[in-house]
Image (cartoon, rainbow, N blue to C red; front, side, top):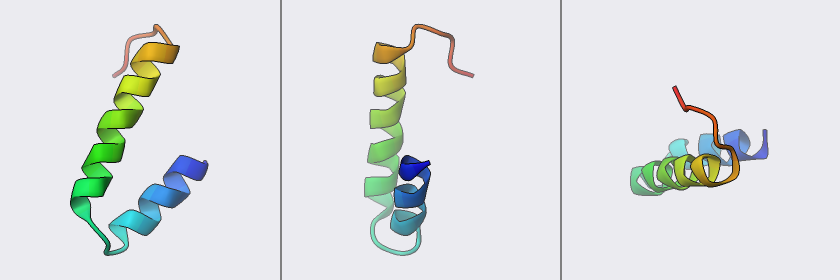
Length: 39
């Protein structure tokens, strides 16, 4: 929930690069901490 709120703020007009960076980080985080297939 917190992640979504932060991402929303970022998209709200700061830096799309940050948005995509956080998406990638979240992907890595999920992959590292939850060994379940990401759709």
